[in-house]
Amino acid sequence: SAGLPVIAPEIGCLTSYLRRDFAVTFDVSNPRGLDGALIEASNRIVGDAEARERAKGFARGLDSNAMSALFRRQLAARARNESACQE
Image (cartoon, rainbow, N blue to C red; front, side, top):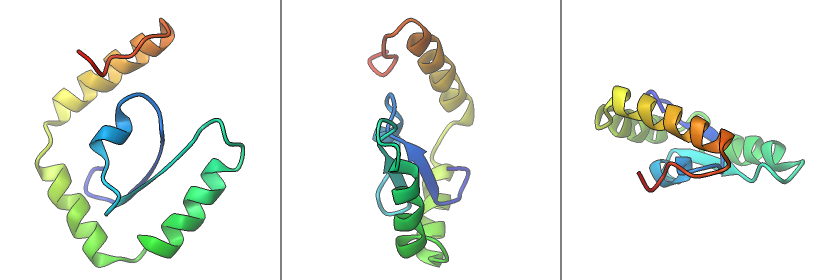
């Protein structure tokens, strides 16, 4: 989250890292999924100073190198039609 509330697709193991108190996720198979997530975020977390503080606290606890490695593995696994979440 880099310390900011986020909107993210529900892919791979990404949703296991994000928490509802500062993130909104959406189903990529739903053509209106992103639209719905933007509306939900604008109603629930945009401008919410507490959500931003929760996101900052979450980001402080993450190892950015480990997260980058996880995302690279997930992209490679996705290309092979697998999941890197179990690694």
